[in-house]
Amino acid sequence: MKTIIRRAVKEDCARLLELIRELAEYEKAPQEVTVTMEHFIESGFGKQPVWWAFVAEVDGRVEGFAMYYIRYSTWKGQRMYLEDLLVTEKMRGQGLGKMLFDQLIVEAKEKNFNGMVWQVLEWNEPAINFYKKYKADFDPEWINCSIPV
Amino acid sequence: MKTIIRRAVKEDCARLLELIRELAEYEKAPQEVTVTMEHFIESGFGKQPVWWAFVAEVDGRVEGFAMYYIRYSTWKGQRMYLEDLLVTEKMRGQGLGKMLFDQLIVEAKEKNFNGMVWQVLEWNEPAINFYKKYKADFDPEWINCSIPV
Image (tube, rainbow over all chains, first blue to last red; front, side, top):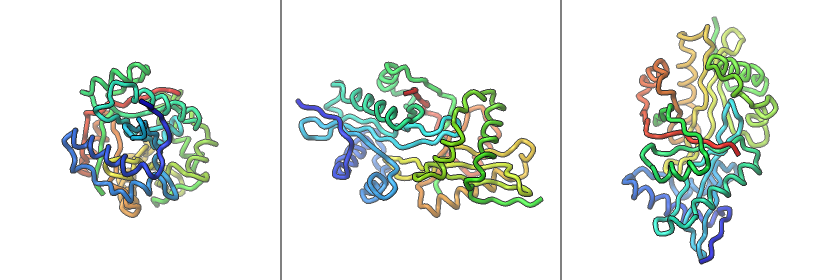
């Protein structure tokens, strides 16, 4: 089994969206994925990219990915916001998540981001335990708010 | 008293950073503001801007601002992330916050963002009540995580 971590390219978008949809079904919210392929590609590889990603490729097939965007904190400046970290069900427990996460840290250092931030669901114990290994700081005091426009 | 809402320009940066620092002192965390003026300006008005803002100007003086960046959601696409909404203490209760928030909604529509998202501290009742007027959705299930890099 040959595993490589590499930067996502435009040609990965179809597979990435497939994985995103699979996860949404697993989370019983497939209707929530309303982004189109065209918008997805344009946002990652158009004139003004707003997301960047790494993929974990196992024997030539993408089995996981990590996607981030740049968060601007008025206190800290530019930070890496980890939007999604995903490994296919059959490939879990083999260290792909760790390889992707470690790659993000390298990237964050190279780009001089002031740290990495993300969110985790309060009941997602496996994920919380994973992040504890990185000595992550957990702050439950904030509530996510949203409105459609 | 003449109040206008306008897009922030480079020349506003010194005043914005002043307001950001004032807020941090009020929140008893002045040491947390580590962003430099240079990085602040570059991030907003450099080659690849990552934040945008509107200011509320009262009789020629900036008394509040709203700053956002673009969040990329793998489910929803590009969304407006409201990083900071701030009105100076002496100008509160006069509708500046509402004017700024309404301007953000106009901007989000114009830029075809899929909604607006932000966070509020769970004990910040005045802010929560303000957002309730906009029928915001509140989701307390997520925990903020971070690591330095």
